[in-house]
Length: 180
Image 1: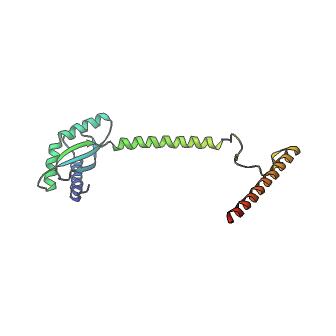
Image 2: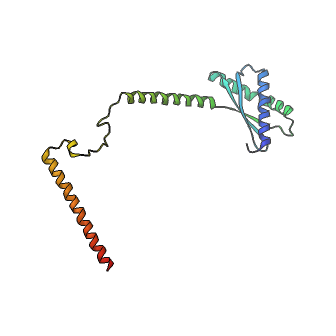
Image 3: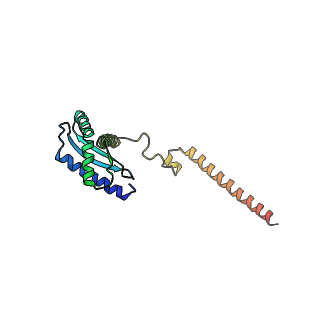
């Protein structure tokens, strides 16, 4: 809430309603209700009261009906204790946060279980090929070539060195031509 006064009024409304519910209502349908949050509009005309109910779906629906029936009485109680010129209208909204939190906890437990399974599989896993496929052979003798192949590789390396030195000589001639 950007309005600090609205925040204070919302906090005060939450306390008043929670205290009144703690004392009890005459309605036997009301269950174990907890006021989780109150949000007040900037003009202090409307208050949304979020609540949770401990119990099954039947108790939740009974408590919702009891709160709806007691809205007028609770509004007059808020008006008496709040001390503002206008008493905000009250709207009771069932807070879905606990159900969402339970669902998120179930998802986190599933992810944790899958991570443990993957870790167990990784502990017993073996490489499909070599342990390090990026290791390069540095010497032809280490590669397991026979002597004829080894000699051929040496010749190819020597030819490459000759070709490289010829390229350097050509570069010197080009540089001499550029200097003129």
